Image (cartoon, rainbow, N blue to C red; front, side, top):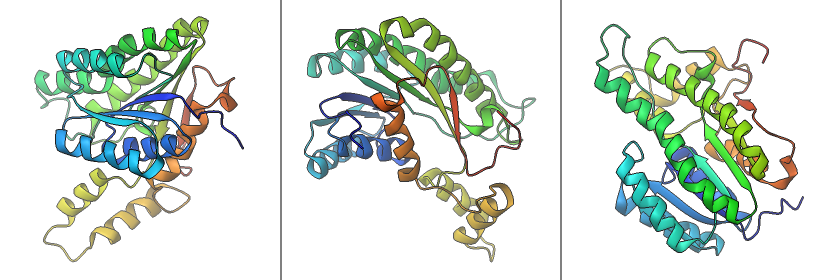
Length: 264
């Protein structure tokens, strides 16, 4: 199937590792030029160079902490000087948390609000004018199954991802007149470096290996009985970015191996 993406231009936050990097490679494989944003300058530049080598597209990496407005403002200016328009924005930057509501300080709430919600707000504001120049576009926001089915140890993550889903719906209604489609993706168990790092910490000093720990998590929660790879998830993003999904507007899509326990 021709996804009609060749020659498009995409901006991906959190693009140097995990889901963001997998999406960047998957889009580049379809002929999309790529800009990836991440905090680690050497890593984001190296990964962008690797995307260009692997797929023969234009690709560049920008060091930016998208939880900070000034970093986003600078990135938007830089992107506008390289791309004279943008077709795709993937708001993907984020990470898990661990706290209780009673003990978590305001500073932690504010940080994750900026990272998961305001980063998407600010990047969308910055990229939409560049999408209008191209006659439309696609914005995908990486939320989480936890937006609907919360995990007990990360109430801030649950809350901010739920807010991101609502933001996606509101933005979709506002921008569809500009031929800009907005959707949210709610992944379940995706085997990212964050999961492996957490598993290593939780199994340290025990007889349980990282693989055994992760296997139990998958079998206890997802009917499919395993984690997905970032690459599996990336295929779905590519479809939602393409004109083949032209009637997909303002929705939240669960890619979770059956983990969600309700009908949605």
